[in-house]
Length: 494
Image (cartoon, rainbow, N blue to C red):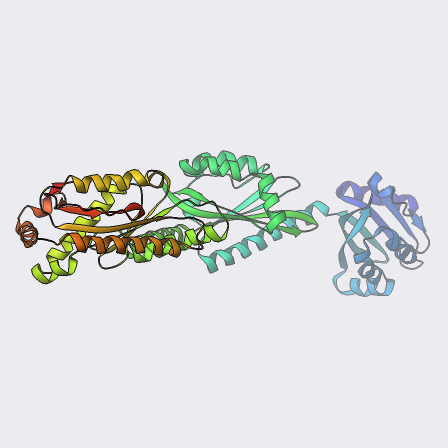
């Protein structure tokens, strides 16, 4: 090769003008000889020849050793002498991007080949430029654009997303994409280095005050990753402050792998309308259930409610639980006579009076109207423990009635005693009630005067504003089959 010193000086000038080049080759295409200038120690450590007699053969040999396996075929094809010269015929410049391996790690480089010009058709110059940072930056920008494009599609389809975070679990660095102005107005950081720490800090102005403790306790790196490992996803409902108003949101997090590293995707969805609809529905359902389980006339629970309680107790009996309860069955006497003689308004008042008596005695037990004139009580706890005293109270109350009245109740009680079901206990109580009812009919008939007294009460203008007037309580109970005879009593208030 002629004028070696001149060539070297030219390469040094080229290097001074383009310090980013890690290597520059000057090739004589007549005999394929070459000389190379290296600008970095890193490139020199690759052990590539600095001068030689067959540039294209040396390039192919070096490619198999220092170029990323996925890029070797493209590089070898481009560095074929005939292919390279054809590429230079039209454009006079040829460029190729590929990856070289430095200490086992790939870095992007760009090969740029061109003719010398000025009538020199015998030489070409090839420069190898380090573009790794540039490519990495472009790829990162492209990924961000792709993420934003994907997020925009998600936002467009769902219309409910408030924001989506992408978190690098290795570094803790994160970025956020939001299309909701209310979120933008919160002034939260859109990127940072410690996602969970910043999330806790930002919760002071982004999370509704009553939910901040919940958020900081539940939204931690450890709990999020544990939930994802166990179920594949993490979810937390709480309230954010959007435009100064508490708004129900659902935060969900899942793991994805991008470019060989784990990324946490965290999305926050506006579920306020859905939650409030569900709350309204639950309230309406609760009211409907309450109404469905209430007797419209007396206000106590109805037969449907009794069957629900019965089913729960039956399940406990089947499960072998230690249950303690008693069933009291009460039946109102003379309801038909009252209805026939004075109309259903009088009969309704009689039912209300009877219900008030039962509720007044069994204050800690649910009372059910299970039939037209039949009531049932299921006593547990305090009333169960005091059952004998409650029955005695009813007996003594009847004994104190000295004048005639209008409310007569037959009653029977049975305690659970390893029965197979609640129905068995009810049947025993029901039999005792009918025994008591027969006794009442044998010893007591309702005087017509008392019925007229009831009719008079119904016509009083002040009836609606008065407490229930219990006229003539005649509740007879015969524990152990003992016969009790009660006289009619004067009206009294409870």
